[in-house]
Length: 186
Image 1 (cartoon, rainbow, N blue to C red):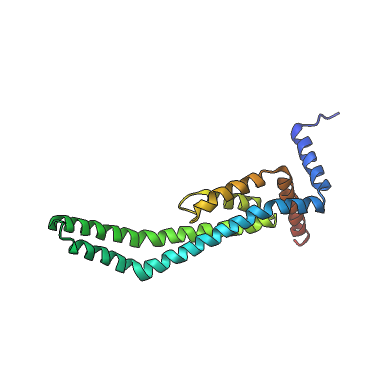
Image 2: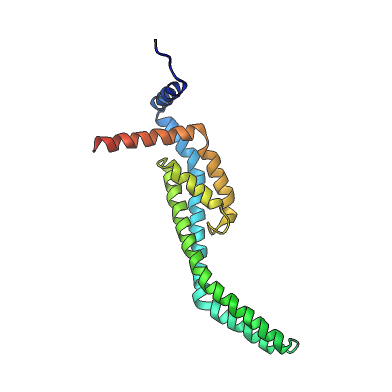
């Protein structure tokens, strides 16, 4: 008589769990992920709206704001000439850095916001746990998600829900169903 290994037993238990998973369980899992998924989508949209505001400022007001600060320094009678020169030199350097760094930051925010939004959609549909985890983690990283004030609590909430056993089972069931459907059409 062959001895059953622990991994075989766990694999069989997982298959049995999937077989016993019915539509009520699936709807329950969908209701659990709905809140954090929508919260992550809102975070991504707010990030993109913040980016639009930043781009507007960059193209419309940034140059005039820097010029206004330079004019304010020139008009200050209490500031020595050498200090004015040094301050304007620092302002020029800062302007060059900002002019290059902001568009790079925008690309990062656009990419992470898209990943967060797609991952949140996949989470809501129980169709991609990897995407959902990536979305939750990216939302929590300051200066990457574009909206870390919301991203941090919503990302933690999403990770807590994703670690729920029933939600994990729901992802496994929907993934195995989609794999079976894909196999039928190959």
